[in-house]
Amino acid sequence: MKKKEFLDAKENALKSLENACDKKKVDDGALPLLAIINTMEGFYTTSSCAGRIVLLEIPQIGDKRGATFLGIWHRTIESEELATASKKATQGLLWLLAQAPILHIGVETLPLAERMVKTAISCGFKNSSIRSLGKKIIIELCSTERLDAPIGKDGCLFCDEKQLCLIVEISNEVIERSQEKLARLTEKLEKIGDFP
Amino acid sequence: MKKKEFLDAKENALKSLENACDKKKVDDGALPLLAIINTMEGFYTTSSCAGRIVLLEIPQIGDKRGATFLGIWHRTIESEELATASKKATQGLLWLLAQAPILHIGVETLPLAERMVKTAISCGFKNSSIRSLGKKIIIELCSTERLDAPIGKDGCLFCDEKQLCLIVEISNEVIERSQEKLARLTEKLEKIGDFP
Image 1 (cartoon, rainbow over the protein chains, first blue to last red):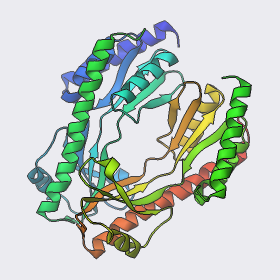
Image 2 (cartoon, chains in turn orange, yellow):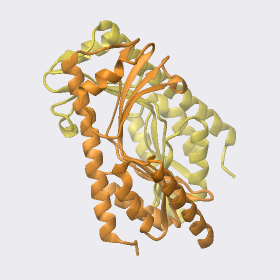
Image 3 (tube, rainbow over the protein chains, first blue to last red):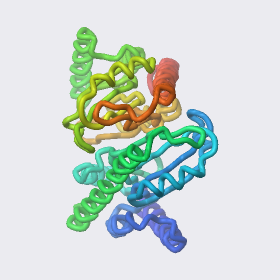
Image 4 (cartoon, rainbow over the protein chains, first blue to last red):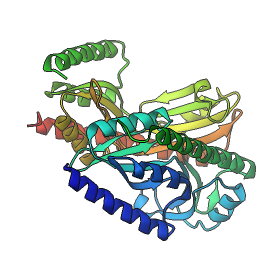
């Protein structure tokens, strides 16, 4: 990819990010990391999630398209919040997901892509990789903590209050670890400045 | 990487695979796909799992090192098998995992890596990517179906028999979809032969 094409793509990505920020569509938790990556030469962020807890209702096993979001939290939660959200359930399987941060980054060159992936892995984003080498080089930074648990069916939870608290505790740990890792990578990239 | 180095690495990988097969350490379900990839010019497999259901006991939240495997099945299971395996649980959290297939492949060149990743994605291995560009190019083929669910604590299951059956049904679906995708990719690669 030519330098000018890369810089144009970066400019567009930064404008999109600014718009998304104005509309409060970007997770606050990811902003410091996005800011530092976007100041680095040869990189721009294209999408991000700082980690989240999601309550989903899926009409039938495997029918993800028919899924309804009953709750999305980009922070730790109380089990009462989950219990309240689950009252909106009607029919189908209730899934609780706790998802680690995920970032997509456009990169100018392959050596830079490799450096960033290695740096992210060293900060705990062990599932990081190069996703595309086509017209644009895109890398994905992601860590491995997660919970994907069916917790109820047809409006009824499988577990009692005590067990629900424990599942919430586990989900919250995914969020806490996510925040630690985001901070660790942000600090590391701040120290590095630009890759040589 | 030079041609000779690649061919030496491929020779070593094929020997290791043969040894692992002799010791019954390779999942039968992955063998047809491994065989076709290893006949292709520019590729050799380095590790594989055809998808599995795992019952784990973890002493404390996050302590994966202290985890004990109470059951590993590379096939669909009956809920009685899970119930029996869970009777071995003593202390800590019981997790049920259903994991999609994962393959690691050494590749001679970047264009070939990209071709294989794209082909895998088109056959449903949507989480496929280039994992390493260092001395060796390594790609990972992986799909997205999974279940990572805490299902009990200190030897007691959270859910009753009916709910356990449902969770087993979901896990079995991960395995069934895994097998379909492995077959689809095997068939596609057989048709392609070698990438031009």
